[in-house]
Amino acid sequence: MPNPIINRIIRNKRYEFIIATDADHTASFDPSWTFSDSSLMTVNWGDGTAIESHATALTHTYAGVGRKYVKFTCPDWTKLTAFDINTDECRFSLPSFGAFTGLLTFNAHVNLFAGVLPSFSKCTVMTYCRVRNNSFSSDIPSFAACTLLTTISFGTNAFSGYVAGCFATQASLSTLNLGTNSLPVASIDAILADLVTSLGLGGRVVCAVTLDGVGNAAPSNPAGLASKAALVAAWGAGNVTTN
Amino acid sequence: MIVQIINVEQGRALIQYESDGYLHRGIVPEEIIIDNVVDDTLLSLAIPYGVDWEFVMGSSRTITWKDIANCLRKAGIWTLVDLRMNPQAVLGAIQTAYRLDAQMMRAYGEQFEKELKDNG
Image 1: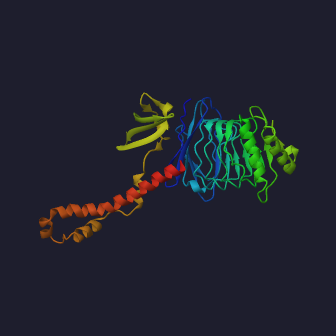
Image 2: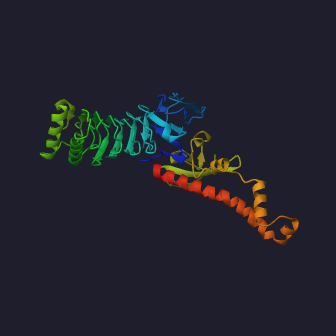
C-alpha cells in the first residue's frame, strides 16, 4: 500500500506535516486546534487557493472529488494544546505528534488512518486521545508516561498488541475503550492486570473499560478473569466489559 | 515544475528542483510526481529538506568588514607594507573571521539533527 504521507520536518520548533484524504474525498475539510499562546496554525489546502492561518480552526470546501493533500505548519510544537481532524476522510498513516509536549487533547476519530499509531510518549500532559473508528494496527503505543489521561478511545480499529505497563500508571483514566480490535488473550490479560495495578494508585477514579466487540479475545481463565473480577469489585460490573 | 527524484522511501519522495534561481530540495508524496513533473500547486506542499541555513545565518552575528579588519590587525597586518610582506596572513585573517560563523552553523546543524532524531 502506498504511504504518501509526509510526517514532518523540525526546524527550530516549527513543525510541518501533510495529511492526505481518501481518493473520493468530496466534503469540506474542517480541522481545529488550540495553542497555549497566540500562535497561528498555517494551512496550505493543496488546491492553489490562498494559504490561511488561524488561532483555532479553519474550514475549506474543495471544488471537486479526489485525494487532497493538506499541509499544516505549526510555528512551535510545544505550544499546541489540541488538534482535531475527526471525520475528514483522512487516509494512510498519521503524522507523529510525539514532539508535542504541551498537547492536551487529540482527536482523529472516524477517518481511514491505517498502520502504526505513532507514539505519544512525550505528550506527558495529554488528557484525551481519541482515534476510534480508523484502521490502526500493530501495538497500542505506550502511554505509561502520560499519567494525566482521562480518556483513551481507540475502539473499532485493528490493534493487535499492547505494551505491558501502559495502563498501570493511570490514576485519572475514566474511559478506556479498546472494543472491536484484534487484541489477543495475552494483551487482554495484560491490560486487565495493569488496570488492577492502577487500583493501588492514590486517587484512582472509576474507569469504564471496554474490551469486548468483534476481534478481541476473551480474558484467560483463571488469570484474566481474576483481574476482571478485581476490577468489577472496584468499579462495578457495568464498567468492565470483555468478551 | 520539472523535478529530479533523489530518493523514494515508503511513498515519500525527496525531490530537487530549481525555482527563481534558487536550488531546493523537498519531500512530497511520490504519487504526485508524474513523469518527473510536479504540479506547481502541489509543489507548494513540499516539506523543505535539510538544515535551514538561512535561519541561522540570518539570526546569528553577521561578519562585517570591521570584524575582518580586526582579524587582519590581530594577524599583524597594519600597513600596506605588512600586507605586501605577508599576503598569506590576509587569507588567514578572513578565514579566522568566517570560521566563527562556521562554528555557529555547525552547532545549529547538530542541534537541528538532534531534534529531528529525538522528536521524529
